[in-house]
Length: 433
Image (cartoon, rainbow, N blue to C red; front, side, top):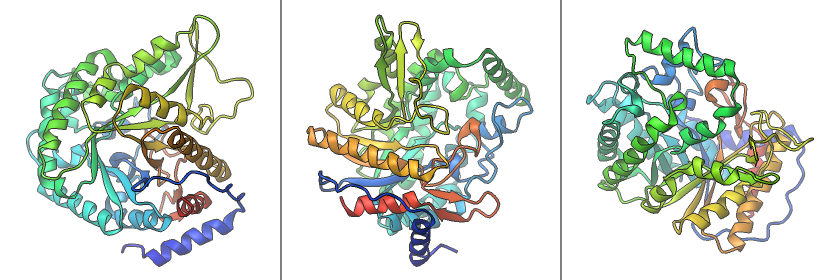
């Protein structure tokens, strides 16, 4: 049964009483008309039981590098109306979520009308709660059949993805408010940048996992985006985005289709820094893809400090998040300004969040991040949203459920949602905007 708005509001009030939080200073910048306040999730990380996906297989291998399997995740597949009610109670006016390719096309060319009908109900419920649906067609996971034939390394992978996008849009396009073909379309290039920081043991374990997946599926070509060779998939992903953009824009529906990027604040440290090389590697040809699309979504969590040898450690004494990287909300302003230099397209903050078990630090993150958006608006930059990652404490890929990004806690046994004080703080920010 869907949670009522009254129950959710009571939960928010209870969350506020859990911990006294400092009052936020009066805001000086009014958000422009139509500014989007939102939260984000992904299909695999929140829905649960995504059994036809590549990630599900990888999570369950004896050789896995995942700390635990996703299992039921947050059961958002069934409890999406609860999530929308929470988002509405906070005062959000948009919600960013994914449709799962592995559910919709479980076998090549075989599309499930049952699943398409399900996502139509999800979209309708999203709108019924006053939330603009922002849809991600692919958030890392792919159907198992797609991974076994080479994933994004296969030359025809762009055409297969465009076929999925066309079919999904034909069924769902009339309800979609905004969309992107990929989440963090350049994620593989971030993997390339960070590759040198991985230990030899982890690299060997990752290789062993993919080899085990190939054996388990009797496919020597098994490939999964987070573990693939970036140089073998980048051109195909760029082509896939271009073809998916055309397929989605064909409608039905008339909504903007953009590129979301993992945007890192790349900072030079000392003389002869490799920062320009790192930045060029991270973005590759994706700014060109942005300029051929309708908007860019920036997704910022921290900064990358780069010296003459490559990636440098955080400064001595720097605060670190539970995800193991530096607490640095100022990165958001830096990447918004980067985007403004690279494109004239509208800029949306499609993810910004922190992994922490100290909700007061999440409150501080929200204040600092929104302040960065305000400063960019005062500078005349066309920023149109602030979307927090994530609404829920959900499955964080290889790290399992140990990292908590959510505004809302989720009981791992019952799936009960408990709003944190930070959710009320975000509600206060929105009311004051």
